[in-house]
Length: 100
Image (tube, rainbow, N blue to C red; front, side, top):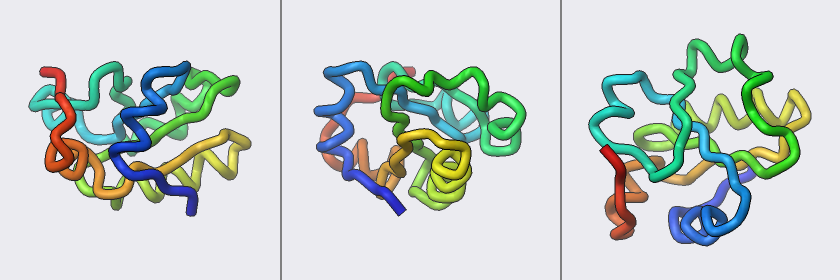
């Protein structure tokens, strides 16, 4: 499993990184990593073509469980994908901003 911590994600966001938040829309609306695109876990397999294959993809959820499974799916589909360890919870604990 390829994983990064929230601080490395913050650095990656300064470039052409894509962040996919696989939580449900209600969770996403409560606060998410700035710039993250919401594609819920159950819909990701059918919406995989919406994700840019030319840049790394960082997958995030609430704590890292759902995003871990979806990172594996994306890696299997040929993406350069990384799970965000600890998810949005770790992002917030690390002092990074969220967007509502």
